[in-house]
Image (cartoon, rainbow, N blue to C red; front, side):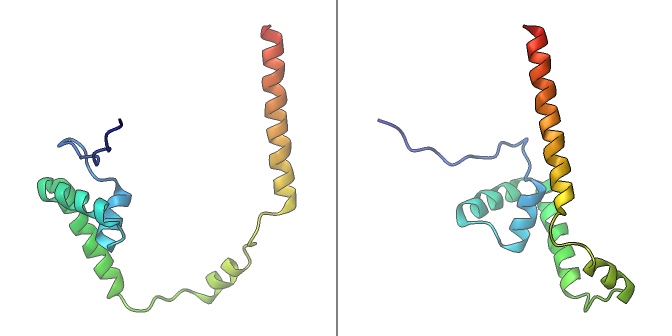
Length: 111
């Protein structure tokens, strides 16, 4: 009979990843992950400070107002292709084939 897996607990030496800090501050964690993170934050001043800094940054961005950019930059950004050019895909495939060929040649020489 198998036992149900217990939820992973943070040890006192572990810290929340930066992605978890951001997700916690943004309220994007699922309930179980949120509760684990909240418990860890209550016991870890370093992670609590990280969450506080993330929340302050989020608040500052929200209250900063409209952003603007020079029209020249907007024009340059709109010229970036939405997909990878076919030539680039072909070059990648050629490099992959060359690597595989090299590895196969090395294996044959070692035998």
